[in-house]
Amino acid sequence: MNMRVVLGSLLAVLVGAGFYFLAISPIIENTNVIEGETAAAEQQGAALTGERNRLLRIQENELHYIDAVGELEASIPTSPNQSELINAFEALATESAVDWEGASFGQPTASAEAAYNEISLNVQVSGQYFELLGYLYSMQDLDRLVRIDSATFAPSVDENIVDLAVTISATAFTTGEVLVTAPVEEEPAPESTEGATEDDVEQTEEGA
Figure 1 (tube, rainbow, N blue to C red):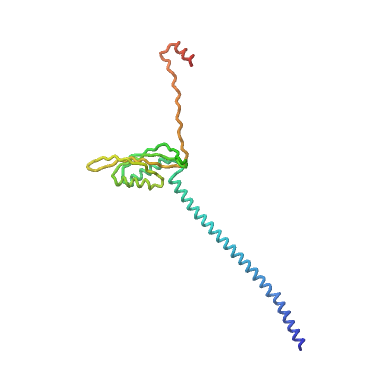
Figure 2 (cartoon, rainbow, N blue to C red):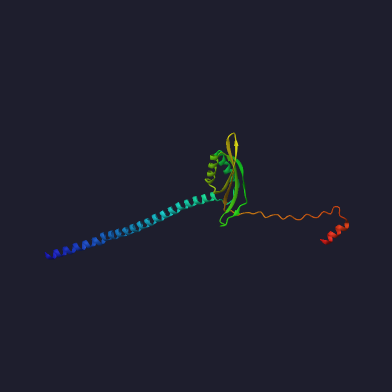
């Protein structure tokens, strides 16, 4: 009887061990593999999320950089663009209710820092004091960077109304190359031989 109990116990142990190794152990191993793969996937996902956030920040900074470059090129263009600047000044005169008289530009010159070139200009407008004051402020609010250096006022009275003629001296800027036209050297005109004798002509040719 005791032998049967012992044999039954051994058989139960063998069946349990066989069930463990054949059924439970593979499940545990698969579970461990799945947990490892899950942890690796989570780490990879976190790394991808961090990389995506980094790229988004780069893209956002790139947009800010592009906007900053666009603003810089608008304020200090790579070419003088005098005609566009004149059109802008004339449009401002209309908006400010002052009379547009004209504008003139000087030759672009390199600045002391050599990072940009300066373009001197004179703008002539006329009108009432407050409208002219608004015009001056509007010049400084242009997308193109303009530095107002001085302004001269010449008043005139017509039917008790004081009008001011204003000449505004200002400076615009460009990053383009300064093209300076070389002076043309004129060749001396040949001496006239009209009225000279043949001997005089011969002496002139021998002297040459």
